Image (cartoon, rainbow, N blue to C red; front, side, top):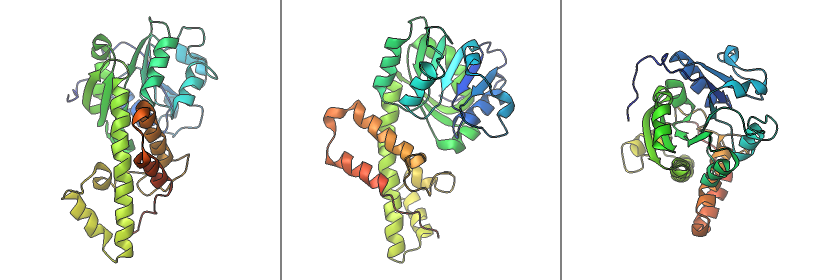
Length: 278
């Protein structure tokens, strides 16, 4: 579904984006630019562009109509919602929760069990990396009730270009973790191929052009020059570490189907070869 380009100033609900890092910060900026009433919250410092939009006290999150969560993992979600920030500690809080963090689908179902039914929940993971967030061209995979998706669609249209309502609650997240499993395979394959090409004396720039125009084309390989984390090697705290987390989420979602390939994929991510400089 293509997004519209009309002003969203008629969208009356106030939005708080929690987790304003590489993805959340440009998402908040895009919402503000599109005319939404929006602010942000993060426990760490943020870039100067969105600093005027940031809340200084987590207690102010409860004033939002819609909370969009873009934190790293399920542990940070629980810290935000129930533990340290306690947004929903007493069952009250924003009446709509959008989970855009990538987590296992069971996390979404657990949230549904823990929160009152009066609070609408939509799982809305996205794909496209920070450059797509900056350009408001993210791809969204949505799970939740049709009425909730329709009500929130102006938000997703302001942030993304390709928006798919996958099905009921949790199905958007299932689609995302399976998509990221495939993406992780391509990251490993591209980086190992480039490293081997360099050892063989092959021009890696030429190989990248060949792969992009041939059967070796992948999203990661085609966007190497645009992806901010393209040259990272593994560290638990960086984006490759997040990819490892996403693979684990996919395996958790289908635990009975895991095998030696899955273990090898995780090990290959941890031993990702350095990105060869041309």
